[in-house]
Length: 351
Ligand SMILES: Nc1ncnc2c1ncn2[C@@H]1O[C@H](COP(=O)(O)OP(=O)(O)OP(=O)(O)O)[C@@H](O)[C@H]1O
Ligand SMILES: [Mg+2]
Image (cartoon, rainbow, N blue to C red; front, side):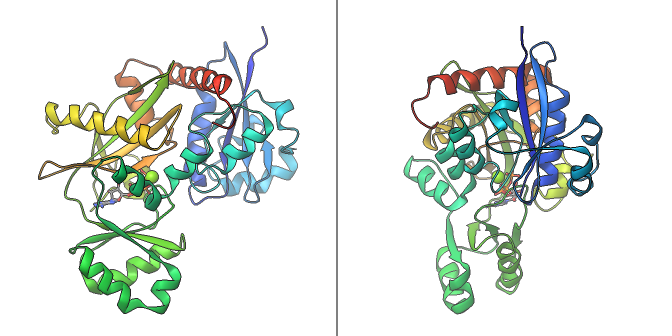
């Protein structure tokens, strides 16, 4: 029997390319060799795809890989991709990765892939639009307002007035479309707003200013299987920094995570999982997703960050929750692939 060729797409154009590389190679190393042949596909900074020889996969950074592409890797045009792989495991994160761009390309090429479709992926990336949809669906989301670069640059006083009217201090500034906590700042007082806006505007042309939430953060992977959508688990997060920063997320030993939750009471866990599912449905997610939020000290449950993909390093929420449910990395990866193939077989038009 021919093995299914799984293209694992990693790297990419976004600020999260290094995170993506770590996700991708871990997926590659954990594919079940009985059924699948892994094709490691590196996307360079110009969006070109290369098939990596195995010797390049353990390289430390995407820069190290990029420098050796011409000599050691084989370029693949988009048109040829269909001949190289049967299925795409999207291990890209961030812009052009889990925001609908690569999904649209794969739709046109007729290649099935992991995760939500074009629209839901785009919604998963845009923190402003997703909040409008979640609010409309009756979920509790942080109070927020959106500030565009042009408005900030031409009318800083007006922006300040709008923030003062809408939110108390502290508040949080973040780029509307980013991940891995990139560009996020906790603003303790008015004097630090400038720094937060400048930081967020490094990454996008619009900033979301949010109410600061006090409480415990949670994260839940949700899986679709045979039409049934269910949370895989729930993890409670105890960051070491003021908030759950890039370093807390990826540096070994920085942050403690508890699956199942350690301090959130069972009654609240039940409600959180209901909210997580509601968010998944409201955004039209398919295949899988990761819904993050807060259980506040005053008992509110808020969805703050629905993600249409999830990091897949060994100690990621994805594999931690799979392990907690009794599944080896290879088992959960196989399930994700087979479920996604079924979803794509049954779709009418783009997912
Ligand atoms: N409204 C808020 N109140 C308090 N802390 C917040 C708030 N929004 C974000 N944070 C902190 O910043 C972190 C990153 O924010 P957020 O989850 O919105 O971004 P992200 O970059 O999309 O993260 P991910 O990598 O999980 O996709 C959160 O995990 C949390 O610690
Ligand atoms: Mg996110």
